Image (tube, rainbow, N blue to C red):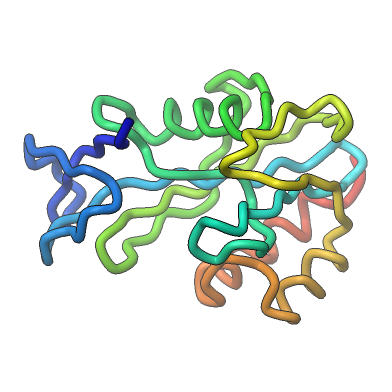
Length: 169
């Protein structure tokens, strides 16, 4: 079943129109994406590997995806966490760390502090092939080796926040 997305204008105002994901999007219209970086209380970052059939397949990423029609970005973020990895979280656990306008999409990036048992995750097989916890230094190496599916500008916008949050509490 295709994903139906709300469309926004360049100022992130809802247009009252929807879009079928995968169909080329009309210039000047945007959809919404929610990304979530999950960091454990002892300072490890959860990353997952994209399914090979997806764009940027085989690359590592934070959890995330398109926000479907009728959702706000927080609701979409929580849904993506549950669908892709089986992680349950509440709205009050997410902290918005970045919002950016990219070509044809707005991306809201959240931080979730939560202890994760990687062995207990339920991976959505068509989206994710592997998940693991890494240190900030390991994440940086993955990024520097072009194995992280995120634009350099976006990652560099909040790299310091991730580094700060990986210091054990």
